[in-house]
Length: 391
Ligand SMILES: NC(=O)c1ccc[n+]([C@@H]2O[C@H](COP(=O)([O-])OP(=O)(O)OC[C@H]3O[C@@H](n4cnc5c(N)ncnc54)[C@H](OP(=O)(O)O)[C@@H]3O)[C@@H](O)[C@H]2O)c1
Image 1: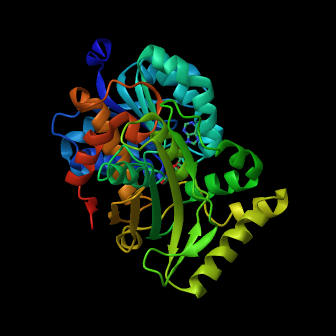
Image 2: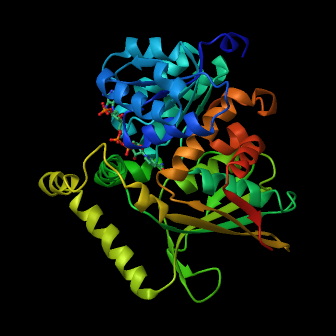
């Protein structure tokens, strides 16, 4: 948009003092283009100064990096921050608690917006409240630009592109990952578990806008793609995001079905995962037990560099057009929750800020695939994520 060309910064990163926020700042500092104009923002000037010092140790010229003080409790500070940016990144979560004022500020200031929420209730609220206004203002509000839900959304998008689009298509995704979680993620997840009814309500498939029927493959448990392992239905936000893309974009066939599974190699692991998640959901239902388990992980903390180096993920997609053909693709990378999430989020913001001529003329509250599609696939591949057709 012409008015956005004149912004002081390409990107302002709100939440730079948090665990994931600082990883995003480091990514922009070390992997962003030389001439990138970015600023870090947060509620504590002291903490921002500490982050800036650590960034300057990586690149000395960042000793003068602009710091913007803004807080969710002061909407005028968010608005002033957003007015200086082409794109706002926010890593301030839980989003259901802190997210909405940032979306509103971006929209009112005419800045594009990306986040890494995985909270269905928040995304549902953002769509209902801001989609029409964002379309009208020609702003892109793109939630879920982390491990939730870029590998699944862009992976399904890549998979349907390998298939004929004039026949019904089914895509099933089998997700494997290992890695530890941060305090911020733990608090957001327990918050979502404690509001299970609202989370479920918010996860319903979207109404299609293209006349295409989109639906979920609802098999709670089945064998994995290679026949011997297990695939357990994973009720995360990802299926909702994939179906929103399918409802909005070409290439997904006249009828599109999507299945989303955790891919588990052994029965013992299957039982351990089911028991672990079941226990966390049960304990999140009651105030005293919820408060007790929230203390297990402290906001601001997360896995160390060595722990992150051991993390990895792989999503196998099996896509089939009615009557054939059938294809297998994969989307894989390192530590899903933080190293790769920081990369995916930063590349999404760079894509919105720098790839204007490659982006589809689509506005409103969008999925990553609908907002950035091929331009983002190209960036993520160049950044080292593996997105390929296997057969
Ligand atoms: N989807 C994914 O794949 C994915 C992956 C990773 C994280 N996440 C999500 O990202 C979010 C952040 O996670 P994290 O581990 O980085 O959390 P964190 O370390 O606790 O960081 C939270 C950030 O929010 C800031 N903040 C909190 N309240 C604020 C307020 N009122 N005004 C301004 N800033 C405020 C904190 O500032 P202070 O430093 O001043 O406290 C901090 O910068 C969580 O919701 C998590 O679930 C999602």
